[in-house]
Amino acid sequence: MKSQPPQRIKTISQFHELRNLPQPEHPLISIVDYSLIQPNENYNSFIQNFYSISLKRTTNAKILYGQQQYDFDAGVLFFLAPNQLFSVQHNSTATPQHTGWLLLIHPDFLWGTSLASIIKKYVFFDYAVNEALFLSEKEEETLNSIIRHIRHEYHANLDQFSQNIIISHLETLLNYSERFYQRQFLTRKISNHQVLDQLDQLLQKYFEGDAIVQKGLPTVQYVAEQLNISASYLGSLLKSLTGMHTQQHIHEKLVEKAKEKLSASSLSISEIAYELGFEHPQSFSKLFKNKTHLTPQEFRQSFHHR
Image 1 (cartoon, helix red, strand yellow):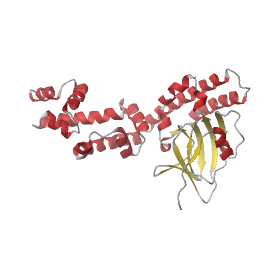
Image 2 (spheres, rainbow, N blue to C red):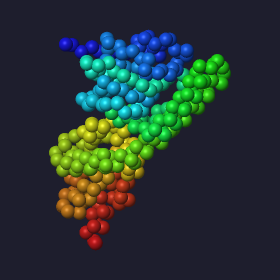
Image 3 (cartoon, rainbow, N blue to C red):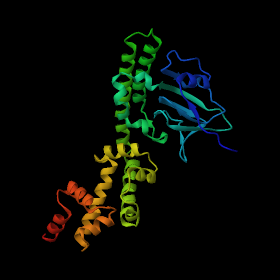
Image 4 (cartoon, rainbow, N blue to C red):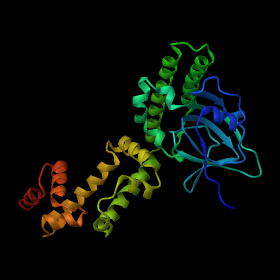
């Protein structure tokens, strides 16, 4: 059976129509009770032109991300930015049961507000669906309280203050979400440190093999794909655990291998630069000095004079 292309949902009103919901009271923002959403049998893949923030508990359905399935039987929070693709696979023997809420925000609602210029700093909008935020009961109630405030303002008579008040609540919700993600990075230490070990092994193998000469330095995107993690989530995780982003880890491993070659071989600086994937020795020397405060030649001389 030929798979259908994803359904493009351009407006919040169109989303309501596809899910058999009453039309939203405001065309640019809506809070939806998940228990009222009806599945659309014609499509199971979607691309939306607006942001969505979802606190959802689901039975009898799996969320797909790439080749992975993710189970949302427990309550989790996840975020989608405009133009992200997501898919839902239903269990054919049972109808999915949803509880929770879905907050839809069109980018136009943010125009002229403080949030318009800073929303992209909330990198969890770029996390994969399977990197959702697991909430404690206390954290869940904190976010539910904010949603109640937004809903109250949303249902009230909209006036000149309404947009700024709602934007303020949205910023509070996003800031709490950022805090809770930091908590998750710390509390899931075992699985997170496994990622650290996998990253170290991946870089070690890459720098010792032919890939470094053939392809140059590994990119952040390449590393994330090999670890089956979104680049944004990997960067946030590493920053939380080690204080360094992914690119810095790549550079640290590079400098480590460079020190080995400078101290234990008679290769020239140019030859070492080439073996480490640099087209120009000057670029290698600049990066090495930036990280060690010594040129490669100065490091080699200092090592041999010890």
